Length: 334
Ligand code: TRP
Image 1 (cartoon, rainbow, N blue to C red):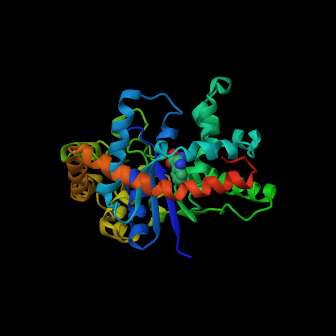
Image 2 (cartoon, rainbow, N blue to C red):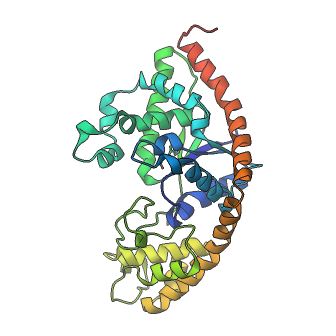
């Protein structure tokens, strides 16, 4: 059986180096290895937190442009928009009837996002993982590339699939496998090596956006937090130096080389020598992507055409699964 991959990103904020190295690059790799890939812009998830309605459609186009600029080929992979396919929300409702509140309460992302005031958190935020399960199960995806922070949600998707199958005595929904992306893909904040680089973090200096120009990239790397000690000559030397490790990780990922090789190359060097090398490399790797993204965004009609075609293809996969799920659950049909 060939792999069927499904993944998605939310149209909130701008994509950054972490999204590129940690996710998009792997999406492209899976596509190039011949897997059947479905990549979705999960806009229904994006509205579970405050957002600006008049910017949502453009943010959706921007994420799609980033997928394509990073190498997702719309003629090979199916690129689509979640909200344009009603079956996502419909399946979510069905799955909500077999998801325990207690399990949702244990989701760390909910706890983080809801903060102290859980009573006032929205039902959308609470049921977010059920929608994610619907996204995945609707396409009978075999593998889901996700970062560390989404593993818990994927595990829940597997449990929901199993509950459906047991409750209705069928072998219908597949239990999707996580596809955990290779070592060194976890990119951390430039200001705090213990926090993930995030598109929603307040300070823009914590991340390199895919739309940053060369000067901005150089400035952010120059100002990135480090420590006064030169670079060590082994992995152990990074103990207690998360910022130093992060910069070397980024370098290795951009250069597509093992970390050990980069460590050997820069052992004993000062950050004042390492940082300019890192910014040259980052600019060289990112500027073609930024340029392609800007070209794509200059022609919204073309992006819309690509998304409409992908959405039609995805819909053709989703609708029969949706219909069968309803059938299994015993609903009347017209
Ligand atoms: N929750 C994911 C995130 O924030 C986004 C997402 C929604 C997703 N639906 C998905 C990822 C389905 C993989 C598969 O990163």
